[in-house]
Length: 269
Ligand code: UDP
Ligand code: MG
Image (tube, rainbow, N blue to C red; front, side, top):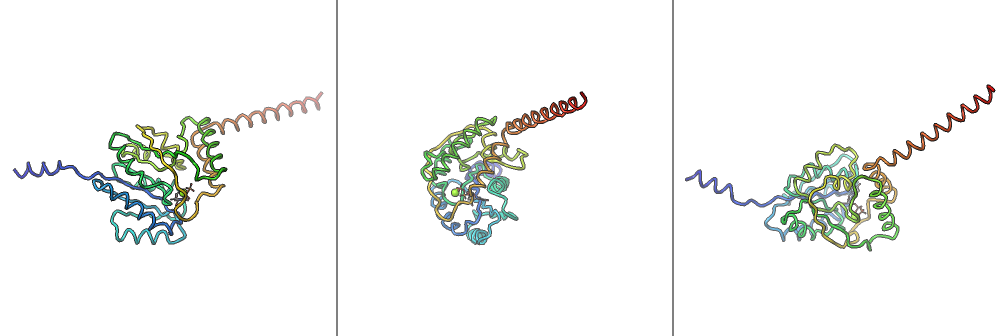
């Protein structure tokens, strides 16, 4: 009888476990604001158990202290401190590595990724989606220059690379455990996450949203950093730039050899 009972208890539905992964770089002023906004949304999902993994990406302000204070009172919080600023891609990778949920949601700390979308993410996941993408309906909150350069980047990248990355979709998404496990098996050291996310594939559903301006602080991606990031994206998934320079190099070398032969013959003759 007792054996039967414990067997029965084991089969009771357990709360599903979801991880939220948040990279923080000098976002001290926003830690509490972020937490308040997130908790409002999580309160609407009482049937799920959440862990919130915060990665302090070498902040020089009080971000880490504030995260640790939060973690003291809220057991959902787990804080990872990186030894220096490694960049958002590395911070997210660290978070994905440690996330233990059956689904994982990377989200920015500055509330540009509206937490209320998590409700739609979870619904789509429960309906069978393995990836739920947040697609920006428009880019009105970006400057003209950022809109243009982003459009050029997607065009160039998707033209050159073997995989295409969806336009106007950031890192904010839900991924099922099977997707995260596939990502973790990729050995890349320099991780252009947008590309890797697309590369692994899986059954994908898209939800539309409006991206708000930053709730606090300033962007951590100045122009030159974005430029390098774009180059990283293209060279990570395409050998075309390498081929171009191979052709340019070979042509140059061939001309040089011919010209040297010409001079040699002229001297001899
Ligand atoms: N971030 C990070 N490391 C960095 C730069 C940014 O962890 O070196 C985090 C940042 O704290 C934020 C997210 O990545 O949570 C997105 O950064 P940001 O909002 O500055 O980028 P933008 O929205 O301007 O593209
Ligand atoms: Mg932002």
